[in-house]
Amino acid sequence: MNSTPKNRNLNSKREDYLEWHEYFMATAFLAAKRSKDPCTQVGACIVNEDKVIVGIGYNGMPNGCPDDEFSWSKETNQGLENKHMYVCHAEVNAIVNKNCTNLKNCMLYVALFPCNECAKVIIQSGIKEVFYISDKHAHKIYTIASKKMFDAAGVKYRQLIPRQKQIVIDFSEIDWNNMNQMPSTPIKSNMTNDGDQQDRD
Ligand SMILES: Nc1ccn([C@H]2C[C@H](O)[C@@H](COP(=O)(O)O)O2)c(=O)n1
Ligand SMILES: [Zn+2]
Image (cartoon, rainbow, N blue to C red; front, top):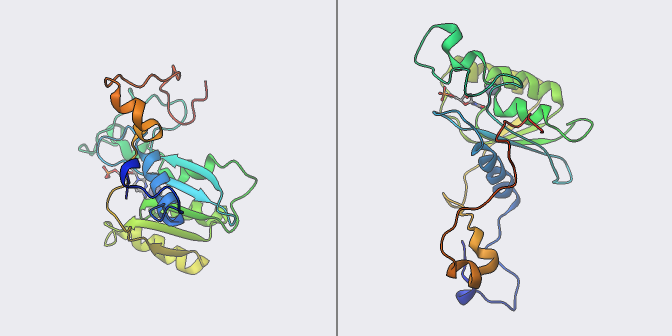
């Protein structure tokens, strides 16, 4: 997939570029890298009819609920110490983070098939199609409920089978000569706050 300058033909169009589905799903997977969930990191990316990304989200604690204070455990049945009480799913965060008026006829890309709570919000938002990679909870009642609602509401869903298992992001690609000669120094970020996606300051 990634060709180095040495073996790349610089006189004709690249052939190994990402196709749209891969690009949007990879964007969802990149967003998932922001998740603090120790067990499962999920990202979601919403795309409009013009193939413009209009919303991105990942699973995380709600606004104002510090992710180093709220429990990330799921081992306990003690309701208040179980993360499932609190975590906002990636799909809902992508929907509430939308940067357009409405999501009518949009497509949603998400790693895991949406649960029933997200399915309700997806339907209400106007999203018309869901692309996912894994349906590993297909046997669970909440997934069956999701599909029942999607079928009734006319929301299509389709599993994506990626052409390759991995897409590598290599920061040194943009300046191959210089960056590969540099000692590996940490990338400095000017973002002082590592707050979650709703923290804008
Ligand atoms: N479609 C989905 C499915 C799951 N999530 C989130 C919810 C939790 O933070 C995590 C699943 O945790 P697990 O039960 O695997 O420990 O993934 C989501 O955002 N969207
Ligand atoms: Zn959900």
